[in-house]
Amino acid sequence: MIDNEGLRALLRSEHEHAVSIFLPTHVAGREIRQDPIRCRVLLDDAAARLLRAGVRRPEIEAMLAPAYKLAADETFWRHQEKGLVVFVAPGFFHYEKAPVEFPEEVLIGRHFHVKHLLPLLAEDGRFWVLTLSASRARLFEATRHAWQDRTPADMPRGVAEVVAETDYQEGVQRSPVSRPRTTGTTGGGSRGAGHPGDASQGHAYEDAETVRKAEFIDYLHRVVGRIEDEVKARKAPFVVVAKPEARGHFRQMAEHLKLTIEGLDLNPDAFDPAELRAKAWAKVRHHFTVGRAEALDRINGLIGTGDQKAMLKPEEIVKAARYGRVDTLFLAADEHLWGHFDEAQDQVVAHGEPTGEDEDLLDYAAGQTILQGGRVELLPKEQVPRNGLMAAILRY
Image: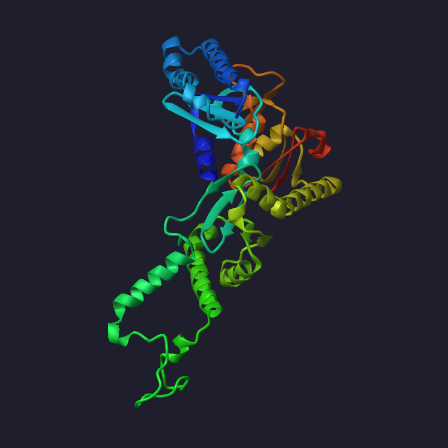
C-alpha cells in the first residue's frame, strides 16, 4: 500500500509524458482471466496516444516495456485486489494494487494522476490500530480500506518473552547462594516465617495474581516504548483492541504521547485482520466525518458573507494551489477538468475536452495542495459548494 511519502514522491515527479493507467481488478472468479487482457488494451491505447503526441515508436516501446511485461505475468494476475494503477514514464515504472475499485482509464500529462488514490492516502483518513493480548502485540497503520503492519522488529512477543528475559538476567546476575528461597524456614537460629527482616518472605508469599499483573505491566511498558517513535511521527486517531484491564494500563502509560484513543473490548487473537479493521474504522469514523462537515460549514459560511478566502472559480483555484495559498480544497471525485497551467504566462487554460498538452486540472490542484501542506476533500459533485467542480478555502 502506497504511503504518504510515496504519494509525494509521485507528485514531485515531472515528465514530458507521464502515463497513469487505472483499472478495476478481481480477487477471484472467471473475470481474473480478463484483467490482463484489459490491461494490454489500455497499454495499446496509451501507446497510440503517445504516438499521436509525437513520441517516436522506439521510445514508446522502451517506456511501456515493463508494463507489457507485467501484463504478461500470469502469476501476478492471480494475486490481485480490487484495483490496480500503473505509472509509466521514460526511465520510470511503478504499480500499486489497491483495495478499492478504480475507473478504467488512461491519463497522460506532465504529472502522474493521483486523485483516485487520495481516499486511501489522505492524512486525515489514517488511524493507528494496536492489537494487544498477553501472547502478542501488533501495530497497524490503517485506512477504511486497508492496513499495513508497522509492528517494530523489537516488539516483545508476549508476556512470556519478557518473563523469560527477566528470569535469565536475574539468573546470571546472582550467585546461587544469593538467590531468594521460595519458602521460609523455622528452627535453629533462623527467624520465623513472616518476620519483616527476612528478605525471602515477600517472594515466598507473593500470590500468583500479583506476579501476573506485574509481569503484564512490565510487558505493556515495553510495548509503549517500542511504538512511541512511530506514533509520534504520524499523529492520528488510535484504536487499542484489548481487554479492559490492558486498555486501562496502556492509556495511563501512553498519556505523554497525547493520543486520541478509542477502545475495542475484544480479544484480537480471535478475529481476522479484515474484521478488526472494519470494527476499528467504525470506532474512528466520526473523527473524519466531523472534520469534513466542519470544513464544509466553514466554506459555506465564507461564501455566504462574501469573504474572499472562499474561492469558487477553477482557474483561480489552480493558480492559488500552485502558489501554496490553498488551505482546504474540495473536489468533485468523478469529474475531470482538462487544461494546463502556463507558468511563463502565469495563466491557467481550461477546456471541455483534452488536447495534446492538457492534463486534469483537478488532479493538478490536488497534487499542488498536498505538496504544500494543504488538505484535499473528495466529494460527490452535488456536495461541492455551488455544485461546482472544485472550491477552496484560502490561507490568505
